[in-house]
Amino acid sequence: MVEGMKRIPDIDQVASLSRDDWQDLCAAICSLIYGSRRVEDRFGKGNGLDAWREVEEGTEGWQFRRLDARLGQPQINNLKENLILAHRRSIEEMQKPLITFTAVINIDPQPGHKGSKGEIERVEELRRWAKENYGITFTYKGVTWIRTQLLKNPYLRPDLFEDLGEAIKEARDIVLDDLLDIKRKLSELTSDANLKNTLHDTFQKILQEAIIHYERGEKCQNQDEFIKAKDSLEDALRLLRIQELDVLLEGKILSLLAGIEAVIGNFHDAIEHGRKAIEILMGFDSNEYISFAKGNLGFALYLNNNFEESEVLLLEVLKYYEDECNFAEIVRTLTHLTQLNICKNTMNLAFSWASRLRESALSLSKMIGPSDLSLSAMGTAANVLSAASIEVGRVIDKKMLLDAIKAYEFIEEISEKAKFERMKITSKAQRAFCIWHMDNISEAEKLYAELINEAQRNLPKVAADCQFNRAKILLELKRVPDSIEAFLDAKDRYNNIGDLLSMEDVDRELSRILK
Image 1 (cartoon, rainbow, N blue to C red):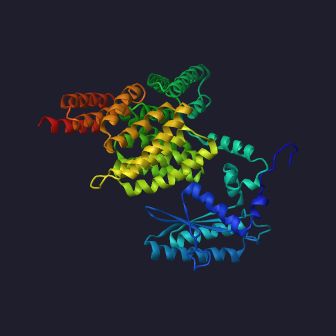
Image 2: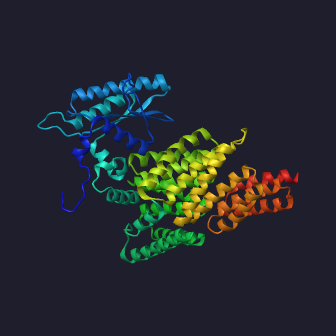
Image 3: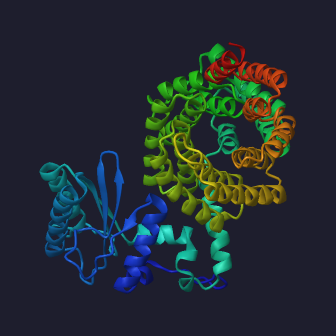
């Protein structure tokens, strides 16, 4: 070790963990990244798996092995036996096929020497055997993979780090580097333009303007600055198209444009630009940008109530980020999937996603401290409680509502301290919704009136939704003229952001009042 450096666990130290410690660490990491559940069957007959999760297509399984010997044919045969067992038990017990089997082993496979078959070749033979005979995708993850994830999450085994505080700080930097947000992608593009010198300078200047406006928009929560960032990207796009230059760069700009348009509530353009971005990017080896574009399109689609297509895209994006072990983007995508199922009123799925999301948000907070991303995730998990407590056809669950209100109050408090204005407003809006359904109608109406003023400049969709809910409350209070006025105002707000389905909701409410 270099003098002055603090001890961190090396490959040999991680590989030589005891059997129980190795399995515990593997289980914790897979739970964190994949949301897998551990199989507690150490003294039972076993089912070939140490962890599993259900997905729509079937069961995904993991086995954690600590070997004392190298990965020879006896070990490969044992893996085959466990895969066959897991395949059979998945069908018998879950009525679903096993579709993946991932072995996490304390050995990094090595090639053969002087013509002998190596571990890498044996793993590849096992992969082909699993697919050809059982239709199962076999994946191998070795000790280097586990160590890499441990360095990102040192709190999982703090005893292995000499300076835990420094290790957590370094892990935080790694996680933040994994963030694929709009600001980071804008910065990347300033050095991505492969243009002639005269155009390169102009292009960079336009992108720098977009970055400045976007940063101001984030810092001040200013809708006008986000719009200026969008305008700058449109200028950059026009420059590229006029000169007929760099189609890949056009796709990247479109993906960013879709993200900003979704943020400001311009859903129609966000969807159009997101689709075009994906169409362009699919022709290039640009998986990160393709997933980024799909995430932005999925976000815009579900905000515009196009749930089915959004869900397909977001599940693809989640799989990509799981494979990349990008925990920050896993949390972001889980947030979208949870909220999408709330909007669809598929509450069993919403609770399932929220359970994983809640744990992931807490883990992310451990890694990087309070952030807009982790607080948004916590807020979405709380949304499930509030939505389920007033589900149509059920008696209102006031205990669940109170739990949701407490969660929103906590998020508002943290957001106030951290100056996350958007998060504070959206959480307050959810709290107002819960208070309304606790029958504190006047208090809820007052909160919604405050929120309309607080949100109308920078969160037009939230302001419109608050006015819609306030109109319904005014109707409950028998203030019919005020209610009609509020509904008409809500309709104007929805029209301004192109939310046609919500405009139809307003029309239905007005037709009931005026018939």
